[in-house]
Length: 149
Image (cartoon, rainbow, N blue to C red):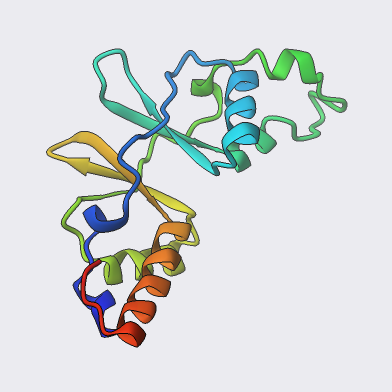
């Protein structure tokens, strides 16, 4: 378990990140979520800058029943762009952030993942599942006398 203390985000993050643009229709995002079992996707501008995150919860929020829309129209809603529901406040960590710090942030904020930025550029994503896998690996290595992340 002490091995976990030495892990960094770069040891466990997913580097091949699926992203969307502000113009990506919610229908397409919903299909990505269904097909890949992701909880959130970074939203990138044309220049590659992270301008937001869109989550399953953001998509659900688009379907709220309100006085203006007592019965949301599914086909109209899923044609809306990511920019209509995304969060522009992006929670991020760096590749060198200790995984212990990410674990604490995940528990405190209750978020499911963080964008990994290196000098402002998206280089990965780290999720609850990544941290759990690292915890299991650290325990397994300790039990088997290994010491590599």
